[in-house]
Image (cartoon, rainbow, N blue to C red; front, side, top):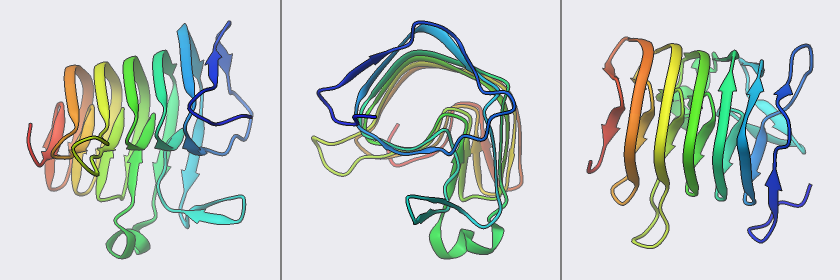
Length: 193
């Protein structure tokens, strides 16, 4: 798979991941247009991290790091469990249904499923919508979530953490949220909202 910013992918059909073991995408830098198709039944359970190309990751999501563009994608029946409790304090890991860490653009997405998180940040769509400078920041434009999420620290239906320069607009939540510390429907914790 070519994974650079000048590469464009477009879904032409729905994708059902039932009974398939699929590793998360470590870093996504390309452009994905889901063309309003659905990716369904992604299952991920991590208790001691996941190894991708001999690198250990303690975050959990379909895409661990997004630096590209993801748009017009719908997910259904995702089941993600991150029980890396023994590494949470040491690494501050995150859990999400779609993207763990976002420095790219996510537009017109819907995430449905169940997420169980022992992470610092847990959310259905993006765990951390980051910003590293005034010119490099994550953008989420039009996202909705449904299903159930439970977690320990910052838990939300859409975004667990929103960085200072990140863009978060047109967000809707229909998710049942169960959090031990800080819970929110749309954004659990943000530097500026």
